[in-house]
Amino acid sequence: MHIRFLKKKKGLHTLEYAIIILIIVAALIAIQVYFKRGVQGGLRDSTDKIGNQYSAANFTSDYQTDTNTQQKELRDKSGQITTDIIVNDQTKQGYETVAGLNTEDTPVSTGAPVGAGTVTTTGTGTSTSTGDDTGTGVITGTDTGKGKGSGTSGSGLGTSGSGSGSGGAGSGTGSGNTGTGSGNTGTGSGNTGTGAGNTGSDGAQDISYNSTIAAAIAALCGSTSGASECSLIQDKHISVLFGDFSQIYGDGADNIMASWEGVTYNTIFVNKILETQSPPEAIAGIIAHEATHADYDYYPQKWIDSTLAEHPGLSASDLHIPGNSIDQECNAFGAATEVWNEIKGSLHDTVLDGTAAAYAQGEANMKSAIRSTYQDQSLPEF
Amino acid sequence: MINTYGCASPADSFQKYSSVDPELNIALEYLSGWVYSEQKGTTGSFAQVVFYRPQKNLSRIAMVVTVSPVAKMTLTDKSLLAVVDSLISKRMKFADAKVLKKSTLNIKNLNVDATEILLSYKTLNSFYSVKSKLIILKERVVIFEYQNKFYTLRYEAKDSEFGRFDQAFSHLIDSLSIK
Image 1: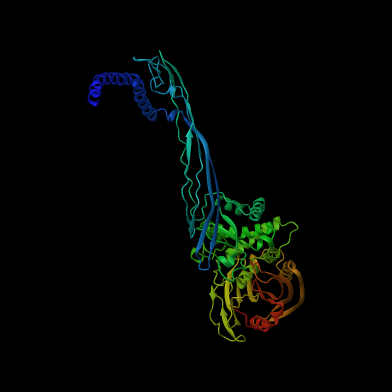
Image 2: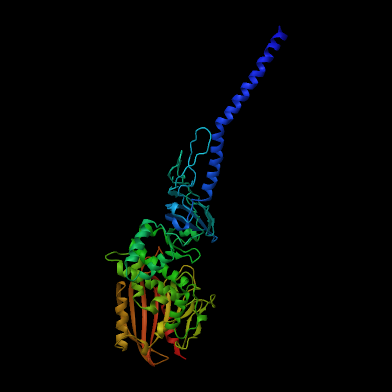
């Protein structure tokens, strides 16, 4: 039974093969259009990638970059300075527009197929579509790069931020003989954000100040006598921070009023005790004192020239500029006194009032008082 | 310049000082163990030497000799009386300032009469310190004019320490000579 069955099956088998082959051929014919579309799509995709993304003549962009940086700098007993970058956020927002692609130098179609429309075909044959690609891709990207880093001795290594954007969609219409085409789909990428971590005490960032320091700087900048010190702080982006001097300089240094840390660190430290002990106007005077030292460091030649002009008997080799001296301290106390006298109103501050009274005695008295009371007895005169 | 020698000498002994700055042009004796520094004023308004104790915990104890050329003084009235009044007027800007004594003193080596003033007032015990506080400072000032220059010799110390070096200041005055 089994042999007979096989023999009977043999005749049917040949027919089945014929049917299957016909089905396959029919299927291939039927999906030919899909293969064709795939190839055309690939070709179009490649074409899109080559063109229509950028046009120097028709490209506009508008970005706003906001940066928020906060850093803390501490000097330990050994003199090593550690900078912690607490916040370093950079947000870049904006858009790029590539417009008027159809007005480019490349030929614009007039009846001939330009670009790639999605063509629907029925059966076999070739359908020709005509349509201009009038897609206007508006590229909107938001870069949200964030950098955060920390460094030692004022050099912080920041990690670069990165950003991405998604392109706007372009649309176009086209009409072909027997088909309809769609305009190019615009694709774009937002700019890659570059959020750089601060390096040490970066002078190129807007500084966020403690509220008391901010009030003091506002008072300084609101005064006439503090105008030059205010400008220096703003122009050089000098950090002004409350500091714990026992941590910065070690035991016994907690009585220091304030310090200018030099151009490298670009920071004025004000003793943190003053945050609760002194009004912002007094702190403004103290900042003026330290900003005067900063001015000597930033503009040494200006001070060399003025010092030599005021003391004809001296030569450049007698001066310690940049550096510090009794003469420089006297000028710094003068700056503090002028600011304090101008803005104090009815306020009282033991140190600033005492300094102002001493300064009013004249240069001879002030210099002798600085010489006999200053901690650094090796301070040169000029 | 700063001289730092003589630190081991007893407090009641003296050593000679001779000015380097020709504008000062003086010689005198000062307390052994103290140091000094010569200073100049803007546009030659004064030359002075400051004697003070070398120590870490500074106190406001100093002796100062200031020489001011009459021609460089900004006062309209350049008499001794006017110079003395100007100094007192400035000192009155300190809290609780008082003139305790005003008298005449003869400078032996120069045979010239000077005005001597003893003042007290409140001032800072140190500059630019968060621990600064007002102390009562006593100041003894001797002013005289000699060869178109005003000489101002000052000794200042905290009220409680003033007597400790007052005699040494008298010695400094007596030893003063013009080179």
